[in-house]
Length: 451
Ligand code: HEM
Image (tube, rainbow, N blue to C red; front, side):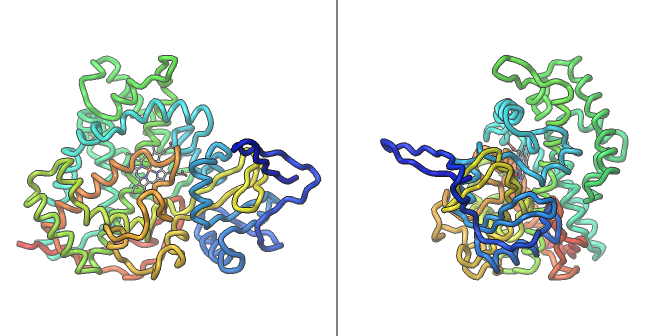
């Protein structure tokens, strides 16, 4: 079957021609195994080398799949054509963890939930969480100061996991973080930041945290739900267009999704930022100068200051170019489509990799070089046209993008003024390419106090 495009009075129509040969991109004849795992990066790089930016393969189970590394087609698929695709095979494992929360759901379930949740992420709301970002950063500063005075080292990977997890939990549970989560001494969500495996054991532990979250919800229900300003109260007050609230099950899925989505990716980006800063002393000095000018000694941290931190923004964007936490996206075609001159048949799996696209030389000259000035005012790309999608694009774009930039700017802006970092661990860490892009062993830095 092939798709035929007809142009009638400035509108395009597609009709299926049953006897016409399908036009599919080049690709190998034998089967290729693709998944969300380390082997897949090597396989995709080989496919690109041998066949170019649009490749078709057959998986060992006989299913058709394409790898797309053409920036314009990626953009088209994620934006104008998004309705022809579902999230795809990469999300099947994540579903065990996140139930049917926003990241994994599709169609009407996703649409309803996205409309309900989106208002919680307005800039105005996120600005109200800046003071928590400051508090969590200052807690780290106190602990790091003691380490620096002892001449010790920091496991920065673990530190960033703990920082980002504590922040998102405080933003979700507000005052209940102290009474229900921190009160028991051991953070019941700590296993998330300590164990990168997404296996059955983790799934069981997540189930247990659902009981804890449900207890907080029930407690809230006995109180005025507007008493606290936090994601929990916003999610509990959210209604769909028929005026219906989330069911308990839906609410739990969305809160677990928010915890996992809200800490892992920011933690990973901060981890890589510190790693890069420790090795690029010019970048470290530039960031220090900007932070000291805009928020001297941690004073005056607000949305205006954070907007002015343009060099920090560039540093983070370059970090996300080199190390996009979500390094691989999958989709599955739910209807026929056409991309460049090729026909996508329904049920085809699609693989897109920000990691590969962001390091493709035709889009990013000298792609392996760390250079935050790529994102500066002289950038050759117009903002909306960069071959760049660490937060995805289109209607399924990350909801926490603004939140994460503020959290990362607050953290780096405050801590860079106190500590100079030296890299102790391997300068070329081995990548761990699971659902998120991590390092196989943690990054270790030695902090030194400026005064
Ligand atoms: C550097 C930080 C972050 C990165 C790189 C990132 C990246 C992404 C990406 C790539 C997706 C879409 C995945 C896909 O389409 O297959 C996504 C979705 C999402 N992210 Fe983030 N994220 C970050 C931080 C956050 C934070 C801090 C939050 C919450 C506070 C958050 C909440 C979400 C949610 C709720 C979705 C699902 C959106 C939907 O499907 O409608 N993210 N994120």
